Amino acid sequence: MSERKAINKYYPPDYNPLEAEKLSRKMAKKLKTMNKSHASIRLMTPFSMRCLECNEYIPKSRKFNGKKELLKEKYLDSIKIYRLTISCPRCANSIAFRTDPGNSDYVMEVGGVRNYVPQKPNDDLNAKTAVESIDETLQRLVREKEMEQNEKMGIKEQADDKMDLLEKRLAKIQQEQEDDEELENLRKKNLEMSQRAEMINRSKHAQQEKAVTTDDLDNLVDQVFDNHRQRTNKPGNNNDEKRTPLFNPTSTKGKIQKKSSVRTNPLGIVIKRGKSLK
Image 1 (cartoon, rainbow, N blue to C red):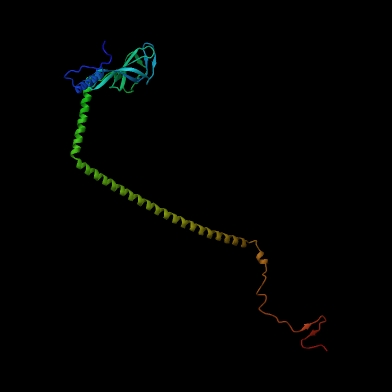
Image 2: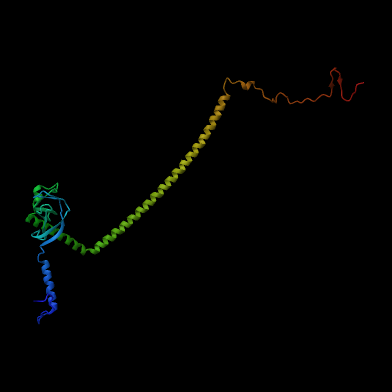
């Protein structure tokens, strides 16, 4: 009976451990990449669908353990197309759909139906489901190549005239700076003119207000005097004639009488000064 863990092992005379390690690594890589077209992945449904066996509703973005398969056909002979397969969570029916690089979408193949198919307003139903033909792809590729060549030629021409482009850019920048300076100067001048106009308007307004006030005062004084004259010159007003002045200078006649030295008594006898009665 052999040992479960052998201690003594046979090594041939031409055994090289470095080469054996390299061979083991190569075999491991081959085993990993042997079934690369078929791989088990974790995916999410890109659209809502319905199972044809049990009518189970499968919403969008639900997670499944599925399989990824690389198809032989390619879009425009360069873009790979994959088939994704999942199983229905209710009846375990296989549901498969593949990628559609031409329309940037997915196409249902087996086991289910899409609940909602987006429709473009400007395209027909036939154009939606139809795949681009070989002639159309060739024409499109030719147009794209022509566009690329034209762009490359334009880039080459620009590379030849780099100095001219730099000079033009510098001239353009200088012109823009000069234009900015001119605009700034014009703005300052306009601001100064507007400030001067405001000052002139204010001074004129102040002068007008002063003239109006003096004129109003003159008119008011004239009106008061006119009213006074009208009152005094009324025809029915005779108070001025009846009034007598308190002092009449013409009544005195300019003479002042001296007091007489003769005195009289109640009996009518005249008494002179300096004489006494005997």
